[in-house]
Image (tube, rainbow over all chains, first blue to last red):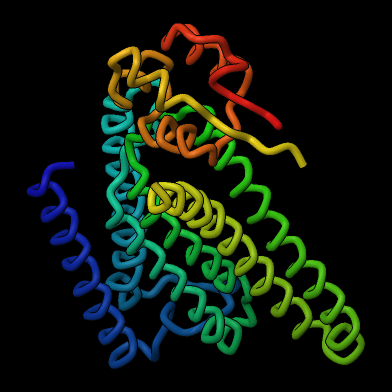
Length: 218
Length: 66
């Protein structure tokens, strides 16, 4: 994706965000927070004052679809340049996407407001930190030693992940399930998301470490 | 446990090949050749045969298990 296109996408995102803030302020100030605050949509009756918030929702949805389509198109074009038998080309900077895992904390707010625990799933995005190490091994020839290291790294990552999952399930079942089923559900969603992140991260980190340590030993 | 020794460096130098050239001939990375020369990597039979052909030396003289 060209730099100008990234800037355009970011500018569009900022415009959307500013409009949403303005629509939210309008809804809060002049419309009793309708649509902004939790409400029963089965009995919803249209009110012209809802228009700014409805436009904000449509705008955000359209922007997200456009953003995803742009990223997918750029990725497809980028992948066309990959060489057969080499690791995929990737910038280590993509590791910054791991910070998206912080979105998992939205789950605290959504649970308190809507009793919705799905956002805790976003903790799994912490696994994207592994892209930092994948980027360091970008465009590397996949020879038999690389394949061995790859298999070893995957195996160790899965072993670690499943061990933690096993302990978490045991502890959750032992401590939480009898007293509080909701707390158990939250605990399991968070644990499974973090374990998924750990497996993704470890498989890339260990592969890099096996490869890197060997190079250091030369 | 069998002890693994590797005489690859000797035969590679005799054949006047750099690690890079040998790696390219047998389809691996230079780092893999380095690891082999230090006897820190146990090659597959296919790679061992490819290396043996590339340096014109018998496998059992390049890779020694004691």
